[in-house]
Amino acid sequence: MLSKKILFLPKYSRKGASSRLRTYQFLPLWNENGVAVTVSSFFTEAYLENLYANKKPAYLHVLSCYWRRLKMLLTAGKYDLVCVEKELFPYFPAFPEWLLARLKGYWVDYDDAVFHNYDQGKYPFVSRFFPHKIDRVMQWANVVIAGNDYLMERARLAGADSVIQLPTVIDPNRYKKKVHEKKNAVTIGWIGSPSTLKYLDAVIPALENLHKKHKIVVLLINGNNPPQFSGNLKTVPWTEDGEVNALLQMDIGIMPLPDNAWERGKCAYKLIQYMACGLPVVASPVGMNREVVQHGVNGFLADTEEEWVEFLGQLISNWKMREAFGTKGYELVMEKYTLAGNFQKMLALVSTPANENAENT
Image (cartoon, rainbow, N blue to C red; front, side, top):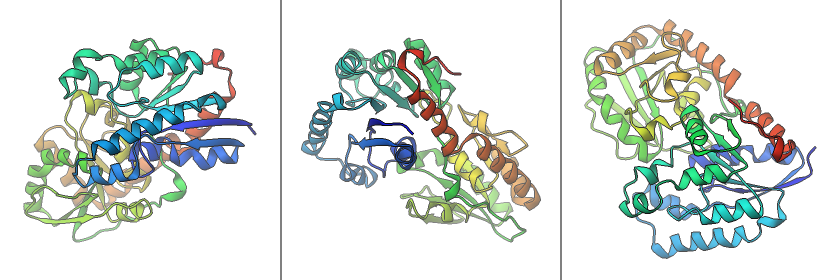
């Protein structure tokens, strides 16, 4: 049992996917191991609700988030460890991290290529005056936790002393394995946040093509304002309690992505969720997707429209293939992408003196 106090500073409340998966789902395990945890997100639940509803948050509300984070930082001295998700203050110079590094030290965690918000961002002022902010945050951290190889490589190039790879993982206790069977209509599904719904545009032509040849249903979880599709399209609101039952309505899971810098930093969590439910997958060969998908074993990697049609068509037509691929995917997730596996690595890291932390590959 550890007798330590940890301050977690995630970007979002539990409703934000990255924060829920990288911070909140581990809290019960920290408590079980005698660690006292304090959690203070940067953005509030109200901010996220506005964001998901495509409403612009009030400036005063955003300023209050900065003020709240500043007040919490003033208490950092009473904790044994400070864990930061991505950065302390979005779109602000890295001076707070520099100061925290010298007064206390910190860990920083990444599951997205947020450094591209600065070196390739949409705000010219930010890109001009502090394009290397996240590199500095990584360099000054005691430990950088990265969700995939792309993020790890950036941390190394930034000069981080200690880098450990921890993929985004699932809690197996929440998931059930689908029972596949022959059926008249096959459901092709997608889950994601409203900001990633745009990625479906690339596969709509393939789905239209398949709709002409097969009886299919397209199911979108959290797919508000879905793309136009002439076939049978269903949308299901996302809830944390209901997401697994929604996933089990699918027969095949998809994850299309463009091959861009930001997308190479993604941690393939959709695929991991599909596989945790025993679903076969078809995904773009981008970033971590190429690591999770074993082509022809637990799913397919599809680049062109023709490949999407071909590989989805094979899975639609062959329920035994769906079952076999789903079993292989399930086995992979249970071996490499579980909550307990990641937590044991973090627990060992917390128990190791800071000056003994070595880079992990």
